[in-house]
Image 1: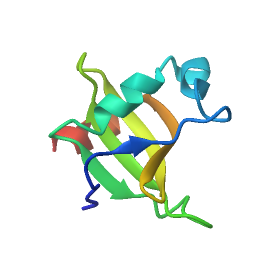
Image 2: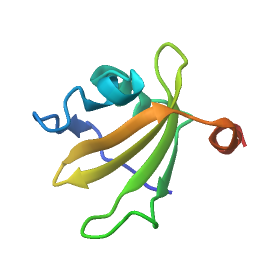
Image 3: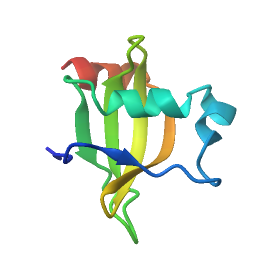
Amino acid sequence: MIILNKPIRFNWDKSNSGKNWTGHKVADQECEEVFFDNGKKILKDLLHSGKEERYILLGKTKQQRLLFIVFTTRGVKVRVISARDINKKENKLYHG
């Protein structure tokens, strides 16, 4: 299990801010909310980790929307790479 230090700070710049809204209708703020879900699951993304380690986060927003988020850490900040609604298989992982 991956542990994130608190307080969590996020890295939103012009290349990733708003990107998930365009592709999946997930707002930057919703992405941030999932990191504070007490029931969240964080796994290493072994398939896509190359130059930097990537992680998969499954969790809920304040509105109970279940999201699948890929992120990395850069220094003390979290950088969200992608975010979307979870699928049926991932839903089982979150609730399992």
